[in-house]
Image 1 (tube, one colour):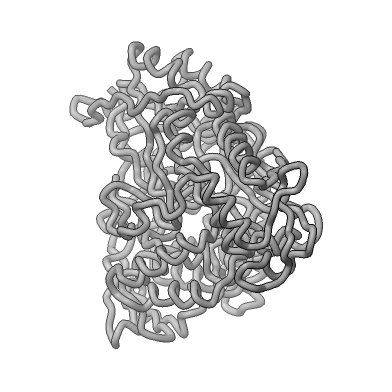
Image 2: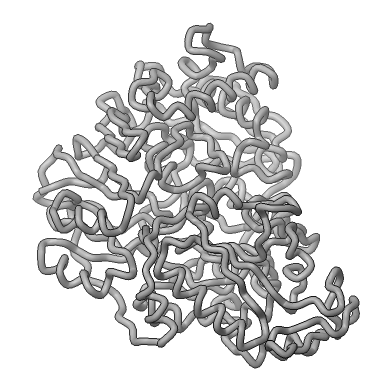
Length: 608
C-alpha cells in the first residue's frame, strides 16, 4: 500500500498511471489543507479507528529483530511498554523528557560515567513499581542475545559499556569504556533501554519458576528464546499473561493474527504522565489501497491515509466531507541500498559508478510529478528536514545533480565505451585512475539488477524514469520487482549466491528513520562496518568519522561524517516521501503536530 515506508517495509499498490505521469513529466500539485487539532471542547472517552497497511503488527516483544523492526511495530509495543527515554517531542527530533520514565542522565568522570535516576510513581499493571531490577533484566537479555537484536552494531551499545551498577531500586550507573559525547550517549545509547517486567518475564517456560533465570548468559539466552517463541505465537497476543504485564498507557485487548487488527484499550492501571483521553484505539490493516480508501469513504475510519496515486483525485472530496488532509512529513531518509557483498560488488564498489548512478536520479522531477510536491530532496544520510540542527550546509545542496552527460563522462573516463547496443563495456580493465577498477574484466557490460517493491505506482514511476535515464548513459538496469515481503527478506548483508543477485534494492517511501531507538543521526547503525542496513558498506574512513561523532561534542564531527557519506554515495539518494498523506475526521482532535518520527501519539487524541 502506498501509505509509507519503514526502515525495512512499505505498504503499496501497483498501477501504471504514476509511471506514465512521471515519464511524461506532467505538472504537480503541492501542499494540503490543515486544521486546528486543539482538544478544546472535545469529549473524553470514545473510540477511534486508525489505519495501518497490510499485516503490519506481527511482533510484540519490544526488543527489535531484523524481520520486524518498523515504527509500526514499535508504535504498538511502546504503547504497552514505555521506553526509558521516549524519542520525538511533537515535531521536534529530540528526546521527550517530560514523558520519559527516567530523569535526564547525569555525566561525570570526563563523560565515562552516566548516572540515571528513575522517576517515582511508575508501576507495572500488577501494582509493583518499575525499578532498576527491570532495567538490569533488559541489559541481561540484550547482552546475551545482542547478535539477534536488529539495532546492534559491533562496538556500540552495549559493547562500549564495561559495567552497570545498581546502587538502589531507582538509580543505576553506567561505566563506559571511554569518554563519549553526552548527546550521542543520551540520544542514541540510552534510548535503547526499555525496562522489562522481571516479575513476569524472567522465566524459561510458562509453568517454570520466575526470577534470576537471566542472571547468567546461558540463562539469559534461554529466557530470550522463550520470549521470542511466545512472540512468534500471534494467536495469544491479547490473552498471554506475559503481554498483560505492562507499564504503558495502553493494553492490547484484542488481536486478529490473520488481519493484524489490534484493539488497544486505555490501561486503567497506568501511572505515567500521558493518560489517554480515549477509551480505545482500533488499528485496522488493509490488503490494498482500494480497501483502505473505501473504508475512508464509508466513514468507518477516523484516521486513514491517501496513497500518492489517489491524492489529486480524492483530496478535495475528503476536505469537503468533514476531513482534514495533511502530509505527515518525517525526519527520515530514502535511499537505494547498494549491494557491496553480492555478485555485483565489483561494480557497486566503484565510487565513479555510484556517482554516475546518482547523476541519473532526477529528484526534482520525481517530486514535481508523482509526489505532487510532497517530498524532500535527499542528498545524504541525514534527513534534509527544514530547520534541522543536524543537516550540514553541504548536504543541503546536490553534489551530483541530474545530468546524463556527467554520468557518461564519468564512465568513459574510467575505461568504458558503449557497444553496438549502447551498453557500456569495459575496454580498459585494471585499477589505474582511468581504468574500470578492481574485479571488473575486459568486455564486462555495465548491467545492474534493481530489486524493488512492485506494489507501488509511485515507486514504479521512479524506477522506470531512473532506468530510462540510465539507458541514455549506457547503463542497463534490469528490473526484479518483488512483493514487499520478498524484498524485505533480502535486506541487509547478502551471501555471494542467490537469492542476493541484485545490485540495488529500493523500498517505497523511506528506508531509515531516526527516532526508533535514537535521535542523533550519527550513522553507526547504517554505515559503520558490520551494519545491517547499508548493504555491507564498509570504509575505515567512514568508521573513523562515525566514531568521532560518538566522542566529540557539537555538530562539527557530525557534519564531517555526513558530508563524506554523501559524497561517497554510500547509497543512492532518492527523494524522501511523506510518511503518509493523512486523512483525519474533523471530530478527532489532538493529533497535530504529527510526530516527527512517525509514531502516532494516541494518548493525546480526543473526539468531539
